Image (cartoon, rainbow, N blue to C red; front, side):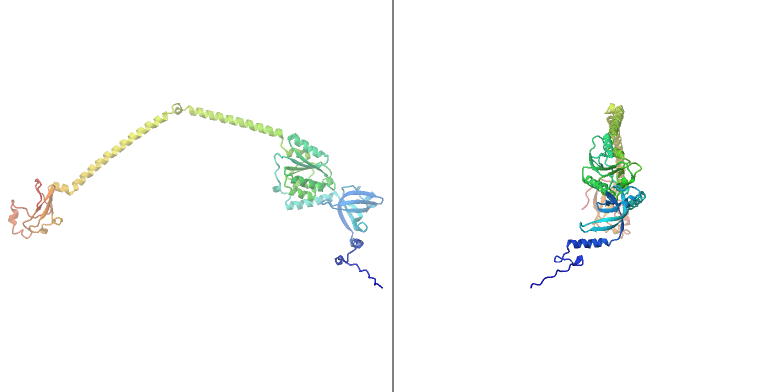
Length: 450
């Protein structure tokens, strides 16, 4: 008899499952249902995007206004009827509900007990809190805003489908600049899909290099209808765009957060159409005025230069261009004559000085002394006889006179002076050695003794 194998028990926990021991789908559904059933009741906020009452129960879809996520909600009709205002699509509500998991369909929904509308005061308070948060991050700072182009090649326009705002922007822009081109993206500008569609259109236009400026336009409306333009995701998308953005939401009194983050705020869509392009008529008038001013300025300048040229031509030097040459030539001749006279005078004075110095040198020279009759007596070695005691008897001495020299021999010395005094006194004898230089009578020169 073959033994019968008993079935293996299923794992208790999800972590214990394996390819050999998996959970059947029913088990997983039951586990999820059991886990969800243990969750407590909670309050959740969202935007109603679908609403369909069926008998005593109303089925609606609750969507997160910031991201594309939604949940199904069932709520008793008596709770819906107890609301102070009728429930409609796009309304912001808070719901007290308990999550429930349907095992047969594998879906989860919320079973609501109560439903309340979010008041205007609550919405404004939340917008104010978000405004302070973004301002603290510097999202609204003026230094991060980009200047608008003077004349954009193409204008990106994000607006509602077949809306008056689109006509206001396009018609006013073309009235000012007929050649302006638009890239228009028609999206939902209110309701649950407004944030998602506006952000998608903004991203598409921002990626287009041919678009130089983007206008986000919407007409006026109630506060709830303008809430998408205070959405944090939209505000951050505009702040991150590289293309300048113009906000034209509602009327002058309306100020969603998009106005604060945009590079320029238009009070109305009409104002945005006037601001996005220049006024062609005004620019033509400005160019015409500038051209006229330029023509007048050039004419004044030409007239001024003409008068100046006339004044120059009227001067004597222009009547006779060589006059200045004659003046300079005469002046140069006078200077040359005066210079020549100065040089000649200096030369005469220098010649006189030279002559005077020559005469002084001649007067002070030994030759001048010799010319006056003096003589120079020298020993054979060339030394001058300064004292007769230095002379030896019969020593050959050299006597230099003014014109030539001759030799002499003394016949007496200092020692013989006493014995031969009578001879020295004789006038007809040869003179003895006496002073080195003495006067004598001039006579014709003769050959010096050897």
